[in-house]
Length: 164
Image (cartoon, rainbow, N blue to C red):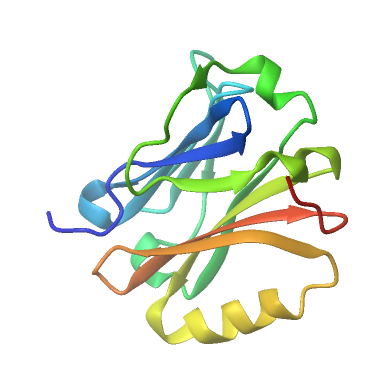
């Protein structure tokens, strides 16, 4: 499999180091998505057949049936709040891995969240334009294609523009 998203690490940066928020990875040979958030042990899996599971790791997660992954034009798979004390909940590292999605810790003081969307190639420009018009603040954003016509759009949202 030659996909552009191979376990992307999500990190918050602060003067004292880098804090792992979670990971995102393609599943089902690029026809699904796995998200894991470190601070609350939440796992989201979106599978090729449309099965979607959201819940805590180690706890049975209910199955939700959505359209098959290949039929997605645009879907917000999940959004998770980023607590203001996130940097006290996860270990620190001196560096972030190459290719990680890194955003500043200043967003944590502004009711931040991170949204994960799957968007097909045809809908990508309109989705990014919609985010540009978003009434809140888009603090950071990255797009990672799966080379099968789908893209993962990760967007850090906050209630006001902040910097570190």
